[in-house]
Image 1 (cartoon, each protein chain N blue to C red):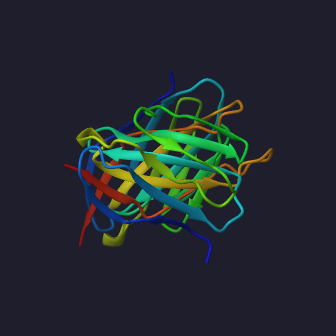
Image 2: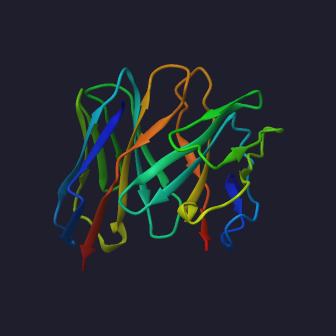
Image 3: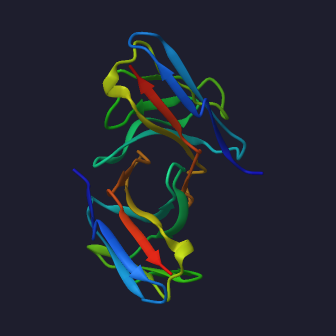
Length: 111
Length: 115
């Protein structure tokens, strides 16, 4: 069974204080790892897809990296508008395009 | 604007009264899926549809039905809702296909309360 564990569950940062979120996964034949951002009461918003170990993607203050067992979402000099829940999901190889999600990390950035 | 739309956005109903939540996408996506999101449990897949010919169960299909008669629409049907189906529901779609286009795009959500 595919498993995705995100840590920490919640993270509180001061504006400008860089940090990282972790996503550990167990999946048979990883086809892709996805990061989403979710604001309260809204649908998840796609951020990144990573396909193979060593791959990195960047978008503004966010940078996602991938190893064979985990992914990190690095947040550099965060701003209050970066406050949200960040979700990690894995896609198993094969004919079923089923995403398995982690429970997310609630990030709060204080001004 | 490329988007996934869901209706209704909010619904309060009573046990046993059949309801349908509609989902539509305008991106010509092949793949569509339904999720429910509950506190402490995260997002769980209910049903998915690879294309108009293939639909299958996800992790939590009990009590739900789906229909994919056309590419853009994927309604979620609760034949006899029960209180344990009170949840936040999301529809998602993806281009999928043979290349690396698996990102799923989510609708705004439907908050369902069954009393």
